[in-house]
Length: 319
Image (cartoon, rainbow, N blue to C red):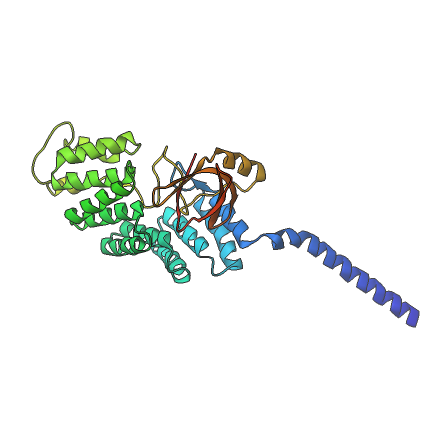
């Protein structure tokens, strides 16, 4: 009986090993996917033209996987907040922005995006506070000034709002969001000439909603004087959303830009990038040599390789 027992034990061992090898073969690809891989798959769904995820629900699934693998992944919480905001779930988005800020207290973009969610909920003072926090972290962030001005305008504090728009344009001449938002602030004050000039400029840069609204109210092209009536302030045009560059403009940093997940697409997209623009307005021309969840490396024309953080340094890519 002993030889038979040994043979049976050997067969059982072989069966167990075979099952283990099969499970390893099928599970290894999933086990090899990192949190950054899931994050990048979500970012590949970002649409620059639409200023949002092409499939927000799928992006949330990918980001859930990234967070499950790396619970302290601040950028993943921030991006998942953006996806929830795309779906109109602003309170849920704020929870993710809160978590991103808890993990990374100097995350300026998370403050900006949380401010936008508060703005969408009509919580304008909270939007002001978040933009102010972003400005403390990034004093030269034109986006933060423009969006804070937008919130101040909703609070009817037009003087401070205009100062913020002016500062945004000083930091970033030709900034379409600032022209768009300042136009609306001027028009709501009854300063139609200045408002129409800004609205026309914004439209030339690709954002025409304020100009169209102003024309429909007879404010541009058919002058009206004095303060707007209560009826005129209803159904105001949407001002440019936070962290979203209008259509036909350049792509964005952390909300959200990355290269497609496949290698061939990535190579093609990298070749289109001519450089980056920093928040301080400095242009760095060169070739993108690597890109991760929060870092981009660029080889400059003089052969140097420089590294920059999305959340602290990079405003946009230049194609």
